Image (cartoon, rainbow over all chains, first blue to last red; front, side, top):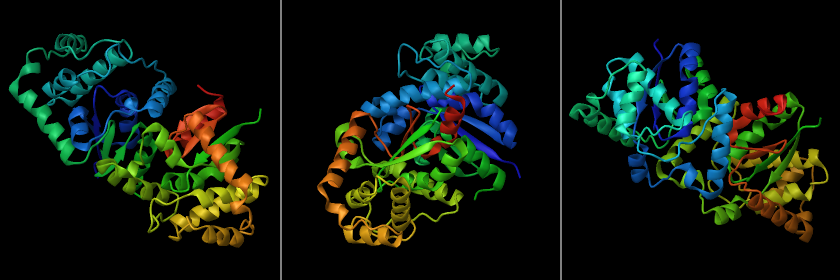
Length: 196
Length: 196
């Protein structure tokens, strides 16, 4: 039985970054194939009438502390980039530009997340995105504006809306939905036992 | 070094119920003293401009599924009572009526949560609350309307507002805030290692 996890995230989501830190280890532990699916959560929020957690007065303060703490537990020093939230269109397109090659697209996704949340880089800028991808060994500069890449991101985001994916990170593990960075342990148990 | 966890919850919070299911085991695992602090989250929501998760279109559907799944992992069949959400004033007062005796107040809190989420009972009704407490071996009928008990619940709820406690369950573990039923593992690591 092959196990599959869809890992839905927005590059502008710090908790998505935190989840990206443990995703490879999770895949190794569970034997699951993980499909990385960046999408535009701003579009989803328009449909759901929701907002980023950071916008709420008390919850936002808590989240700022909690996300840094969650990254620190994994040995990383999370810092929000100067411009935040930012457009994740260019970064997401870079991943879909390489979609035929999961290893390459995941390597670029990780490099982009690292650039944004560890190095404070502006990954809303297509030129920066292309440079980060090149440094990770993959050339996406020309494909970033390709019509099929633009369309692919739209299609995937529409799919997120249709499937009720309302936050980031969001996982579909063998068909079962899990929301949030804290669901790692639940999701592992679910995959190992085929539910409960 | 004595470890202390404040366990803040609203009886009208199904995730608070789920947390109550693991709280004793958590105390035993960590050696922490757990202080059960029911409060009125409706008052907090008025201050924070927030709402119960169940009120949001997509998130609400997910939460209904997730809370049942979380309880099932702990061997319980969570069902929302017919009237939901409900006033948790009477149930909360019952706990503070017994505050001088932590074992008694926790036993009554558990009995009330069980009545609401496993047996579908209406714990907004003071007569029901008193009957459930009596069945758990503790008489609270006369104390439910005592001025000092009413005042205690107000004071505790004000404290929740002042301290930025915006959800249920919410934990303060040796001074560190954690929000949500999923924080059990983080909180255990925090207490065991004195942070990270």
